[in-house]
Length: 216
Image 1 (cartoon, rainbow, N blue to C red):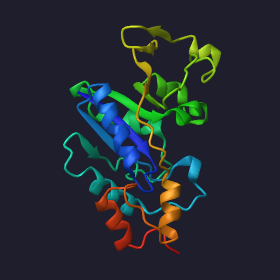
Image 2 (image 1 turned 90 degrees about the vertical axis):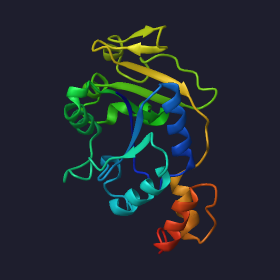
Image 3 (image 1 turned 120 degrees about the vertical axis):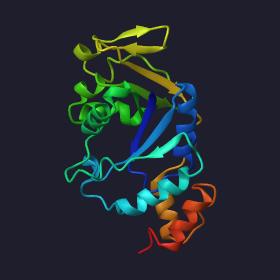
Image 4 (image 1 turned 180 degrees about the vertical axis):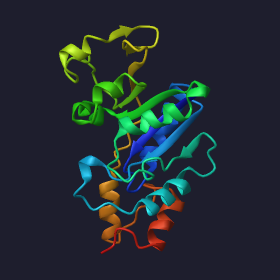
């Protein structure tokens, strides 16, 4: 099994998320992409985040009808702060008999901040990393992102066009269609009563309106 794990706050999930997920599914020939919303993201502990319930419902509505997309509430089942390393560890343990090959999907900005994540070195050795980049992005190697000592443990593999680490997992950078859509802008527009057509799916748009999300 080759699965992609796509984490984020998803407040709300938008067309950009869906398009990127669709392209990564194709690029890496994945069987499934799992959307995993963070329940208590450590970098947003003091931020006002929409309840997990509403974010879950919007994700389910957005991915309905696509058999390759699925949802997981694995992070909401933990009462503590949401840490990616624990989520990956749990999934790999849960599906160890199926020999799950896991790709952690994230954007280039998030990857550039990877050293601020809990147990980031262990995380990078646990699964593949699929980094989504914008058109024109020039990658100069891992040394500028990771510590030089840790980066030296990875060697560029021409066959997979990625950096292979000591555990056999690779870090790959792939360009995707860049849709300049931000969840924060959608929340702002909804708060001001402005239209969010074509930024989110119609089902998500109707859900936002029905539940008066992001309105004061």
